[in-house]
Amino acid sequence: MIYEGKQKIWSDYQKEIPDDHWYYVRSCIRQNFFPASERMFTEITQKVLGKDVYETPYHTTCGGIAYHCDTIPQETVMTIVARQFALMTEAGYENYCPSCITSFGNYAETLETWREFPELEAKIRENLWKACKREFNKPKYLAHSSDLIYHWREEIRKRAKHLLINQETGEPLRIVEHIGCHYSKMFPHKGVGGAEYPYVLAGMVESWGGQVIDYPERRHCCGYGFRQYHAKANRGYSLSNTHKKFESMEPYKPDAIITNCPGCPYFLDRWQYVIAEQTGKTYGENGYGIPVFTYEEIAGLVLGYDPWDLGLQLHQVAVEPLLKKMGVEYDPKAKYLGLNKEDLMRPEMPNSIKCC
Amino acid sequence: MTNYFDELMKDYRFREGFHTCINCGTCTAICPAAEFYCYDPRKIVTTVETRDDEKIEALLKSDTIWYCGECMSCVTRCPRKNGPGLVIMALRDLSIRTGFFTESEKGRQILPLTHALTGNILNYGYCVYPETFKWDDHKESGPVFKWHLEHIEQTMKRLGANYKGKGPGVLRKIPQESLDEIKAIFDVTGGTERIKQVEAASKKKAKEMGLTDEEYERRAFEYCSDKHFNK
Ligand code: SF4
Ligand code: SF4
Image 1: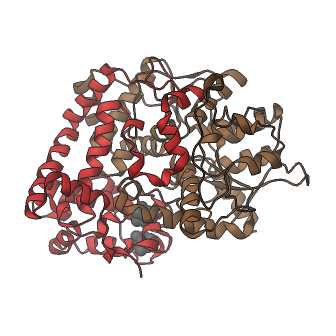
Image 2: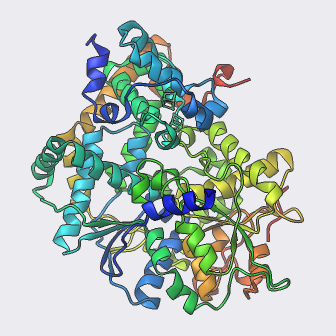
Image 3: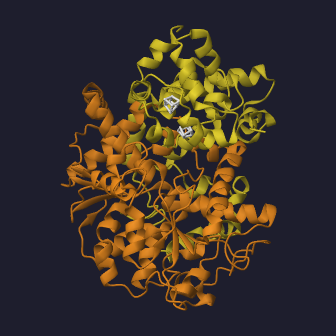
């Protein structure tokens, strides 16, 4: 009975995702903290899957973080969004794909608000014309870049070199999926699976051989909280909420965490380091943390890319425990080398959490 | 401006997020901010519901409205389709427009936040940018990020980014004509005016507190008294 109820909710939130011709816009946070993930997105979609995913150098931030730090008015952020739509229109696309979850939420909020208050859309069109002499069509489809990897997950599985299976035991790896709040908490119908049973990452994990872990704080925010991180005085908020999640997932012994939001992998990774340095507590096996990944990083590992080409050296929590379980070969000596094996020294090692 | 409720009703977020509250407390139960701060989103909605200007003014001057993380978890769970997070966004906007934000420790953080975020947007076209991400203010980013920032040209190249480069790609240099358009958008939509408002009110408050502008901004960014927390 309960299962049927779940199936019903799930079928209510199936989302149509066109198979090709996407206009791609980047994420401020991901470009700073996970630069290789976005590069992998275009590599996988364009080169491996042969899809048309187009990017223009003229696009900018959507302003979403500034908006949710309450530093710019709603009209400002909506007009920046309108300019992004104008660039899409001029490039001849109608399927819009942001790489950021804050952006995705921002675009969804803008489109929904305009639908409800058409006079506001008219005002924003006027603003955009005054400021930039541009006009725009609204996107026909809006999908987050994790929606696209979800959509193509079986294509990726067909090309898999590694699976989310423990090579020693043959058991599926135990994966925690963490969805960014602004993916579907505001507009459940905009996300694959809605807000309570989002399936976007779970679908990838299952297709690639892993097992998704359910745990009490699964839907709890990572603790970013915008101003709660960007103002130094508030960071205890961010840390405490991440701590709550780790305490909740610990008994389920996850092998890894997969995320689809720009901030979440950063916070889930870095606050583990801070918790270990402050209290000595680590959540993984043998003094390691639980490695945290973006969905492109996991897709890249499944497809057989070198972990250091995927940017996994920029994580503070060592990724090697998962690489070993998956049977991914890697050269430990190459981890911190630059291009053409340039010696860039290496980062200092933390005191409490084990690193490689 | 005395009729604060009418002012709030002009805000689209408020109109989306404010309906009759049945005081069930669901929003508070799942709220990450309520977990940490002395904060109860239910009370915010019920206070605003009184339409009592004095009470709303007290909220606008309080730390309370700045505790929310705008995660919007409450929007999903409210049985009455309220969005306390959206109500908060409208209250914050009004607190800034009235200058009341300088009356609270958490409200005063708007100055450093405005400088950091709008500075990055107008100067680089990004909300966050490596050159303004100072490791000393971000030690939580770990030794690995210190190393990354120290070798940023090389590490970005190694990972296939187009850092400060022409054309598309990760952290490309956003062309000046695009930055000019963003500036024009700020001018036309009240973004520039907002920055000036925040600066002027903060300057006044700094003087009142006997601090230089720099001291005031630094203090707002990093000082945290212990009155905010759940014990
Ligand atoms: S949006 Fe604010 S009030 Fe709502 S759950 Fe998140 S932190 Fe709490
Ligand atoms: S969940 Fe909704 S109805 Fe319940 S207390 Fe919060 S705002 Fe009121």
